[in-house]
Image 1 (cartoon, rainbow, N blue to C red):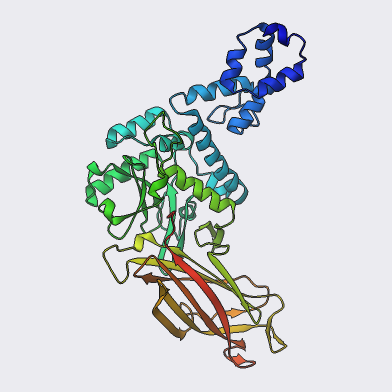
Image 2 (cartoon, rainbow, N blue to C red):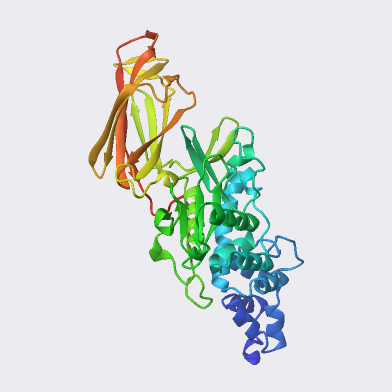
Length: 445
């Protein structure tokens, strides 16, 4: 082999080596000095580090700078030598995608991500809680040990309560915002639910994520089968919790040598990253606080209708913490968000333009499995009569609808008057709200 390569220049040899896997490059480098020198070229390992780990500068797994890419790759492989390397790369891609989005859109939440946990931290949790974490979850925590949590739980005084990387929603006096817990809080909260909520330690379920507002929403990881569950009104057994990921996607959660190991935590965070990246969910500002809002923002989950210059956007989200799996009439609850605004050209009726219009009444038709289960015809929305002006921000309100089934819809209209209710400039007109879905999703957040 050495004689055959004697006539090759640096570039052809570099191209040949770049087509090999890192393990094959190391094997080939043992053939002769020429190959050993080429295999140790810094630009080759810079390319490998970027392709496998998306590293543009040499650094270790904690982000500490290193003098060269050759050393960086070596330290990364040593740090995660007990895990399947394809899974390490996949978990890093998951976190990279999330952190890129947070850096661009919600940096104050990215700042709450903790430094990765050590193997001894993970072993301590497993010993104390008598569980064995699924491999993907272990790796997720090796990269980031959850989030720094807010010191206070009062959402009116603690803006940090809205920095959960999973996000949440509000309606009436119910508000949730979900954080990924650090390992010390996983231990503390799991012990709490075992003591106070009747959980059995034999269930091998541990608390992984939780809301830090006054409203409770808790996610549990089953360490045996790798499924993630969210608590309902009565989260005492697996039967009274709702799975967050399709069971058919979970596999090889404890198998070091299995193909494509994936538990619910990894799948859940990957799906969350996809929704953020595609703009399905976004950061919204309420008062002085910004947070990830789980109400969908794009079709088909969000519908937009314009009538006489009045635009209405509507979408809904499943509220698992309100679900009651034994209540036949109100088994599933959905929160819905209505965002209304007057377009810059104003309110236009029969060719006449008005600079304002005001809501007077609402009419809703609510269906479950195609059958009408409720019809609402009343004044105002949440006790308010919003007055719209061209180009102003949206008037937003949230409400909820319980259903006997996990599939339904809402449609209807609002009655407005041009001008103001106290000084109408014409007769009332209806603003349509297109039918929007109430669906229990495959991935529950």
